Length: 72
Image (cartoon, rainbow, N blue to C red; front, side, top):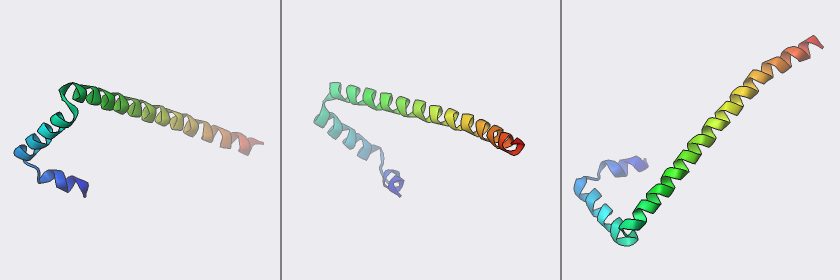
């Protein structure tokens, strides 16, 4: 649903929003904000990949543990 709002925005509206952001934060501050958002996204992706790797290891480990339990 929130994406429906962005579908109705045209180039003129986006330009007005960009001008307001520049006025509020200043041109130099926008670069800092963009850099922090980029770092945050990279860190999030790295954590997701690490979580997926851990889940794969646990999935590989789980069948081995169940086969050992059956032997005992």
